[in-house]
Every structure is written in C-alpha cells, then in structure tokens.
Image (cartoon, rainbow, N blue to C red; front, side, top):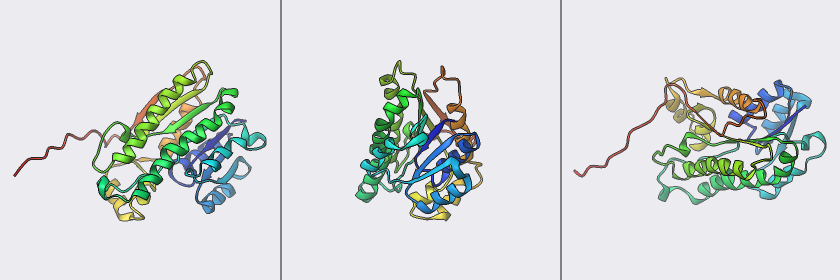
Length: 247
C-alpha cells in the first residue's frame, strides 16, 4: 500500500484528493489548520486517513512531518497543495501581514516540507506534485504576490527535477485555471457573493476534476514524468493587454 501526504486537506482540491487516493487504496496523511474538518474527514475515510493539524507557516512543525512513525512515514507521494492568496487590491494598499502569510505558506512552507521529505522520497523513488496556477504564467491586476509565489512553485518544480536527476523521483507542477472551491471565499474574507459572481454561468472546473488529474499523474508508469500541466475550463482562455490612454 502506498502513502500520500497532502497539505491543505481541509477543503477544495486537497479534500477531493484525499478522498480520491483513499478510494484508490492509498494511505493518506492529511494536514491543515482546521482540526474540525480534518476530524470529519477522518471519520469518513477511516483507518486510511491520518489527520494532522499543521500550519504551513510553522517551519518546525512542517519539518516534523518527515518524522512520522510506522507506515505513515513511508511517503511515496508529496502533494504540496496548501496555498493562500491575498485580496486582489493593488500592492501598495494590501496589508503586509496578508502578503507575508501568502509567501510563508505558498513558498517557505512548501520548500521546507519538500526538503525535509526528500531523503524518504528518494529512498522510495517517489514523486512530488506541486499545485501551481495559471497565475504563474498569465498576469492579472492584483495578482502580483500570488502570481509571483505560483511562478516560484512552477520554477522550483522544474529546477528540483534537475536536482533529483538520476534518483527516479518524479516532480510535476500542476497549474489549474478557474476551479470553483473555497479559494475565492477565503481570499475575499468570506464574501460568498463574490465567489458566486466569479463562477456564474461559466462551468468552472471542480476540485474533483483536479483531484482526478493528480491521480492520473501519480499513477502513470514510473518511467514517465509530467513536467508541467496547465489545465483550464473550456470557458476560460486568455485576455488581451490593458492600455491606459490619456484623456
């Protein structure tokens, strides 16, 4: 039986991935900040799921995940899913603490956990799947910090694969577009109406869509590596440049 460690398993893609891998016969270690949700998921998934309350901003706690006992410590796949986004306000008006939380979660915690687990993943010839975003490639107003962190995740994935050359460890950056989860609600401080407006009438992707993609990548033959995978709903494409004109 294989084991996956999923960060941010309390909602959205992480929650859907936990269910998908448990149904596929894997052990699932799920981390997140909301213990009540982790406990509820543990009740649903039973002995296949180990809930651990961990804040990605706490580097010591994150590094401690590399010291789990028994089969839970035999990590075959790390899914770096946990992530935050600040409001889409212009950078000068965004609260610094919100920006720092995003950077510490999306970048610092991800690197710390990956680094701590590399000896195990190398020994087991495992895999790392990092959740980046189309925001890593396509700019939008108010996305400077979030897009910057996701561009880091994408480049980190590519360079990490180079570092791990010859070890058999696979590394993938998955870069979703618009998927309807709690992401926008969290980003806007609980504004459910803003989330409904964003996804209205456009048939967005679901958390389950992305979880199924992650499952596909994870279960490919071990001689195949998906370097980066960009995925959007059919209704989403690319915007043009904005132009400011003097009156």
